[in-house]
Image 1 (cartoon, rainbow, N blue to C red):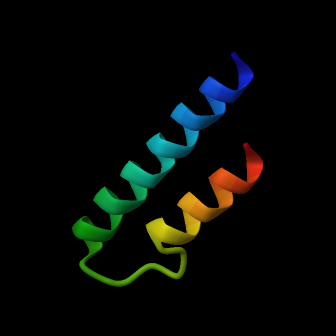
Image 2 (image 1 turned 60 degrees about the horizontal axis):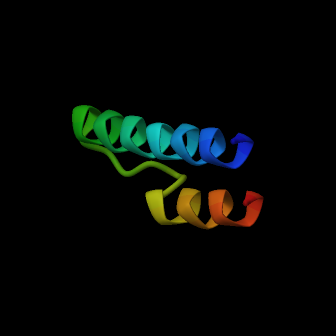
Image 3 (image 1 turned 60 degrees about the vertical axis):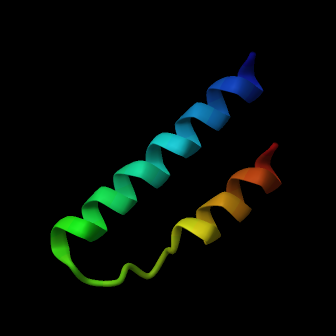
Length: 43
């Protein structure tokens, strides 16, 4: 249950970062791949 919530939370952050990046049209320091890596390490 906790794992599922964590995964949903991570995916939400990734989507928000992508939207934020598209909105600003500048590269972010934290790439979505890095967040995926980080989230998978938490699981």
